[in-house]
Image (cartoon, rainbow, N blue to C red):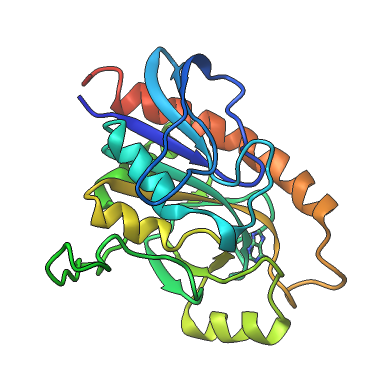
Amino acid sequence: MTQLAIIGGTGLTQLNELNIIKRHKINTPYGSPSADFIVGELNQIEIIFLARHGNPHKVPPHKINYRANLWGLKQLGVDQIIAVAAVGGISPSMVPAHIAIPEQIIDYSYGRLHTFFEDNDYPVTHIDFTYPYSQKLRSQLINAATEIGLPITPFGTYGCTQGPRLETAAEIKRMENDGCDVVGMTGMPEAALAKELKIDYAAVSVVANWAAGKTEGEITMVDIEHNLEAGMANVTLLLKKFISLHHSSVN
Ligand code: HPA
């Protein structure tokens, strides 16, 4: 049986439709996770939910204990993660409230504890990260979006910045030249740590705003929250369809 976890980011601190069964407070050799792990049912299927920034939303992207979060999920038997995260849109099609299932990552973050393989207790280990996301999980999510007629972008490159400030216009121009379609602050090291733990991992990127320099005026938290409300409603529909297509019948 596959144990699915959903990690919710900004705009998805809790899954309102989750029928909560229990909460696990877990301590790990890497410290405390962002929040309790919530076990609940979505569409009658048991899943585990974790609020990446804590609940209430208070842990900034560079302070998230990614290792504790992933380690805790692994301890709970999780072997599949859908990671939902807000992003800025760089490519013209990445309009606010749009959803993408990226297939590549460029990591611009720094100074984060980003591996489980840093002490002498392990032989030197270099995981393969050619394809950072699970292709199978990505196609299942894309399939679910098609089934509900949700127009998503089934590819794209996610650029991960350090935050918590947003980028400069020049930084976004550089990222665009590098091939980034969306920009976020939490995709790494989360994806790499999942891969180190051999957990299938895919990202659902929800566009909260145009990235810096892509529109006139300032990017405000009010606009971000407004766009995320619309985007996250679609994420919930997508997750429910994904579960009914790829979990109910096989588990
Ligand atoms: N940049 C980085 N991360 C983000 C953004 C952005 O513009 N919007 C939401 N998360």
